[in-house]
Image (cartoon, rainbow, N blue to C red; front, side):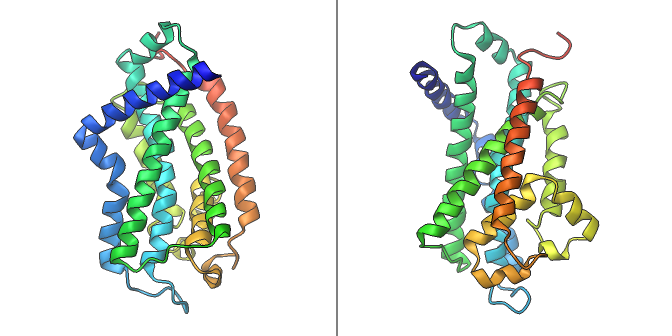
Length: 265
């Protein structure tokens, strides 16, 4: 296990350096949620939601933090792996005398680092420019921690499983990005979940992002904001169950579908 972690952390360091050196890729990976926060916050930020004191900016930042999980863990993994499969990186790594698990430790390390960076910048931007309240209670941050861990774990595993669908690395973004966009629009990221058509709510409720956004709202919005939810509750227990179920499903799918070589081979 020590060898797996040591090599995995070394692999993580290499991948982080590669990410930072790719300026365009680093910008969109690390800063894109913040760009959306600035755009939507500038247009709708001060609007009050319903009969509460919750502003759209407060509502939106919770959705963007949840979306950051989806971006970093699902979308990036589902794009990076096919590209590495295409350019021969996976084939070379598979031929090395290194534990295969170290490759995934490196990927998970990159996902966690990216998510932490995005979240810190989002919260600082929201607090400085849009009056976002950052919770100080231990209970809120404990809830944030387990929601983030379950979300990152489930979405990373689903990203690994989904990475087997694109036939080429070039087509990975075209296959993955629309899936993320559809889930964002249906899960209450860009709009109030109550304002989304009922059939779209039912569809989004099947997938992790809806529960991630709802869980993050329970962290960053006041308790009375639960009145804005369809069930008039943040449903914390159900959120944990759904994310745990997707974690198990993602693990099964990842083990069964992951490939080190291109499909034609």
